[in-house]
Length: 140
Image 1 (cartoon, rainbow, N blue to C red):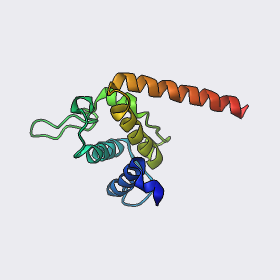
Image 2 (cartoon, one colour; image 1 turned 90 degrees about the vertical axis):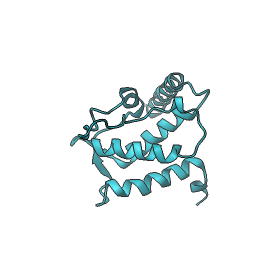
Image 3 (cartoon, one colour; image 1 turned 90 degrees about the horizontal axis):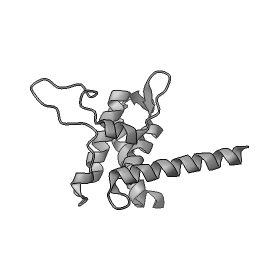
Image 4 (cartoon, one colour; image 1 turned 45 degrees about the vertical axis):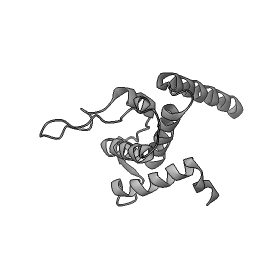
């Protein structure tokens, strides 16, 4: 219960609640398209009412324009794709854990440090690389 009172815990709880809308059968995996919609919805929910500098908010999906709905892939922000590091199964599905980690990555990148998204992304990538290398050394 205490872990859910932290900001991260609250975000994870939101992820659980929102995930149910995309995975009604509780398989803990969804299509890539559904995962992108899920992440977009969670980030909108998390950022609602917050007073961040909105210029640092990268929208996962551009708004649909025109009368015909655009495919999620046509609306996808490529900078956003790099930030996600979504892992796909052999069937091109996204697991719940991967989608939640993607949400947490976005939060760190968009809200961390001095608000410079590119700098925050580079720092997070460096940290992950160092952690992976250190983990590899411990595994030997």
